[in-house]
Image (cartoon, rainbow, N blue to C red; front, side):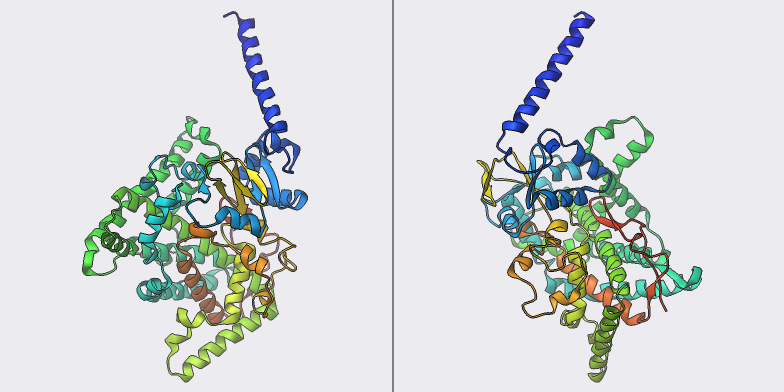
Length: 500
């Protein structure tokens, strides 16, 4: 083919593609859904917002401008109302399926759901079977029975080590985020692997946690810009080798679980394997390994981030800080009267403290660690969402960042106000339905009881030990502005506090 003919062929192909894109954008079934003009034709602005850590804020800004249902890409619609959230995340076999984004994010491209983790299973039927096997091990009663004592030890260790760090630091300052991260990773490894990473002892992240963080970045890039992994650069190759590296480490979970057998609870998978055997089901070792990696990834930075924002929010409000310290002091006095100091901070007791739990809920409302989009596809044949019919090829997403800040649902939505959870009738039914820091429906985070127990214990221990803690001068509203790379983080990646 002559050079001119080749150029003409390319131009013709581009013209056909452009015409199809424009026609689909202007005449397709989503044409009546409001949104920026470019979203009809391209997803590039959304991709750019994602890779620059602004996706949740970009989508939230579009909701504020266009309403609770907005087209954010040619084939994606963001929904932000209690009604649409219920429609999309309702429980049942005829419900919505997770989108293929989840497979791309983890790199598990297998078509067989049975070879995937619960997080990446698309079909709700095999997901329900897997969740049934795992549900008991993650129940509140089982977590308390097997892990509460060890969790408390790790929390006390972390809070105690903050004091030593502050004593050697400039101005008596300590970065609480650093210690929350080390603590959460030690607790997660203890529960999942049956042995702690001992990051608290060394005062730094071990090789596995560093690899896991790199693996998370690789997963995000793979989901959003998959072609980047083919760049012939050593740094890129190392980054995309991390998911396999973390899987190799996680394989020890299977060994520990098999060896524990009936001798006791070596790690959480020991209980899961026993439940699977009782149910006459089997989980392949490779799937257990993938689940272990998934649980460590989900259970480390997420809890640490929430604790970091909580400390900042409380210390920035002296009155709230004082009231929380008083509530915890009363709890200790009541336990002392019973001559049982252990009960003071047992999870069962902490769960009954109104202000403590209100502070945690309000932090999860505004700064839950994973407030981003939960993409779903309608069932075959499509479905009606919020009164609008959606074809089955459309990606529908909800994000708690927007639902938790909707002024039609919450009074003073941008204000951190723990008392909204204390007033009788203070929350509308809509607000309660919209509150979903751990996701919704059958796909809600299975580890939420672990996270909540860890939050209660850490908050109570920190504010009891350091009742006069205050924010360091460098910890400002600007340093704590969130950024979002699949979980939120303070933009400064630290939260410095003076303990006394």
